[in-house]
Image 1 (cartoon, protein in one colour):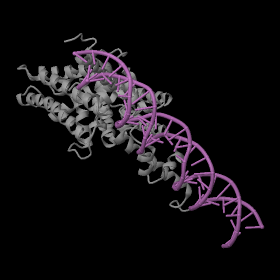
Image 2 (cartoon, chains in turn orange, brown, red, blue):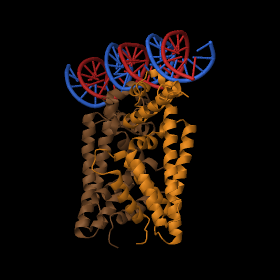
Image 3 (spheres, helix red, strand yellow):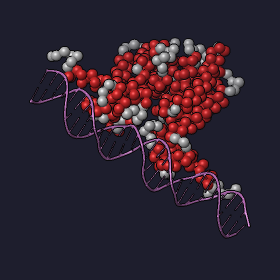
Image 4 (tube, helix red, strand yellow):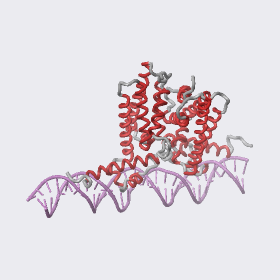
Length: 201
Length: 201
DNA sequence: GAGCCGAATCTAAGCGCTCACTTACCTTTG
DNA sequence: CAAAGGTAAGTGAGCGCTTAGATTCGGCTC
């Protein structure tokens, strides 16, 4: 095993990651169709052709970004709700986690929420499945709270949709240079989530 | 005055409107950069060059769509809150109006909420001003309710942002062929808004 | 009311340019 | 030397937009 810093393998891995990172930044700022493969290569410090050494196509870059992002979110939300705490605590934890991700990783979040129409039909269906899974996690916690009598809402499915909606839209308007921190937003939205589902005081 | 159906003037007006309409559909489905001027012209039943008879550029089409859409929303929300009803009723009316627009006109709403990055800096600033005005209307109703003691929320500005956020994101996920009607969503979100601002029962 | 003009609508053709992606080749490293 | 990383120099296709000119039509003249 050789020095990691000079290994060909490690160099390749680093370039691959730099390209993905550059693609996230560019797709977020200019959109998939507004970004050229030259933009991505240049931002990664490589020649235009280098994109195709590590990725099959521009669309495959978007797909990789989308899969990774949705995996992270699904795991985080699942983790947050997989406790034996009361429904109120679990909903608050799920929303807090979800909001923190969308605020802290708003660049990635913008790409994986707003650029999905540029995916191939097959890739889109794959991502749509992951999104349905995230939706299901949130809806089931709300439904459970309603069944147990902890929550009171006229429509648990709409309530769950609204909670996810708030997190997603956060990625659209959130600015790093604003005065609202991810943590203060997570606090506010966690409290708001309990109002939305009608959690008993 | 000649027959309207055959007048040159009327033909021109109709083409202009058809181009704008085609642009809304295309921008919504494929994004600004994913749409070609040929797409727009073809959808409007005209040759590619006809776009430039009625509009200066592709960006100017987007600008016209954005101005129109924001004018409608600002007027609707202002109208809904300009009554001497109690704050709770005014917030509910504003949210109801806002949600109805974003559900019924989700195609337009998608364009004017998600394609603004493609505007020139000057046009973007113009639209940003209109968006701030909409934000102000909503925030002021919430703040007034808090001052009068009708509402109870730890952060009126965040609450107002959340209410607008819900409406905007609705345009992203709403489908005409879904089972949720604009009216049922408006009802649900109006009730939800009162929970969010902590309206006294 | 026939004949014509000017303005507006619209298109065929195509301009210069950038796009995503490929090929043929060199370099680095184990 | 084999395998992987990387690039210079393209490819054809499609882009936004322009130009030159044909067509349409209301209104004016006599």
